[in-house]
Image (tube, rainbow, N blue to C red; front, side, top):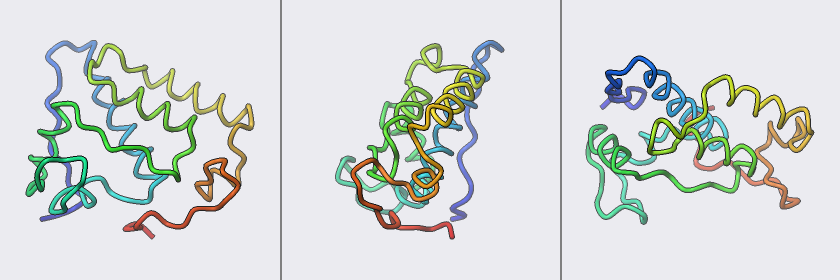
Length: 139
């Protein structure tokens, strides 16, 4: 099973909602960048405490996500970034921010220095400690 492949998203028929799938996907990319894991690799074929059964296929993962499952926050994800990720992952596409809003939010986070460059590169979570790698699959 190729781990880098994600199931194709079913795009909403309304053109005004099509960008919301991209926003959701961007939330996935943010999660993967900060945790240094691929969601598919960390969920398919493994028993996750928060899931009632082992996901055997990429399609199983897509099914639980479409039913509302979202991975929990890992400590390497700073809170302002986590808020952005969870907004991107809203179940209702109309409640997701647009990509321009997400971009503005990320620029504001950087400008407010709520995350220093060191925190962004190390994944520090404001606890005063530098967490280690969260099961890296990307090096």
